Amino acid sequence: MDISHKIVYQEGFGEIVEKKSRFLAYIFPADNEEQALERIAQIKKKHYDARHNCFAYVIGDKNETERCSDDGEPSGTAGRPMLEVLTGQGIHNAVAIVTRYFGGTLLGTGGLVRAYTSAVQKGLSACVLLEQKSGYRLIVKTDYNDMGKIQYLMRTEGITQLDICYEDAVEMQLLVPEMEIDALEKKITEVTAGRALLSRQDKLAFGMAGDDVVLLSGG
Figure 1 (cartoon, rainbow, N blue to C red):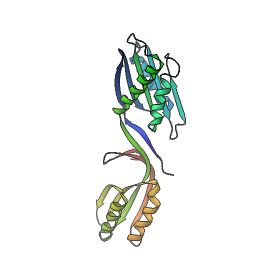
Figure 2 (figure 1 turned 90 degrees about the vertical axis):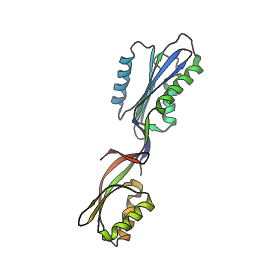
Figure 3 (figure 1 turned 60 degrees about the horizontal axis):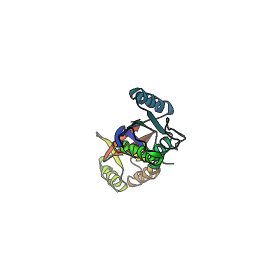
Figure 4 (figure 1 turned 90 degrees about the horizontal axis):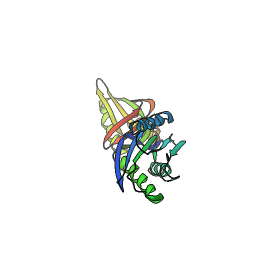
């Protein structure tokens, strides 16, 4: 099965002010719970003088681990809304920490929910988010006569070329989504009448930042 989910590729920071209370939102990637807890401890140390350092994190391809904390705010007004922003946007393997510096005016439960929700959204807007997918690096060795056929097939199938080497034969490195690898190998074999040599490498994770390919593992 193809794996596809949204991750934080580059961390972000956002700040909002509600009735003179400052809400500082930090969003970090976290591959495991230990990394999430390290980031929380780091922000708590940085803002030791703040009244609240609330957090939420989601870990795992299916968000197997979800945790949140109101850190002294009324129950359900901070951590849970923060967590719902992450899950609502389909984000995995990330931690959000929101530091609040109290401004002297109570916001009420509804105001707190809106403030913590808005702070996380502001932090996420400053992040670089990627749709992480699973796929394979496919090495194709072919003669020059068949190269055009393979390149035409790549264009029609939307396949990304990572590299190409011209020697006695042509060696192409293709990035193929997991769900498409079997069908593409079959099509290449058919259009070249079996002349192309195919070598499927280990599975990797990748994402797209605009038109640029970002290899997240196996690169």
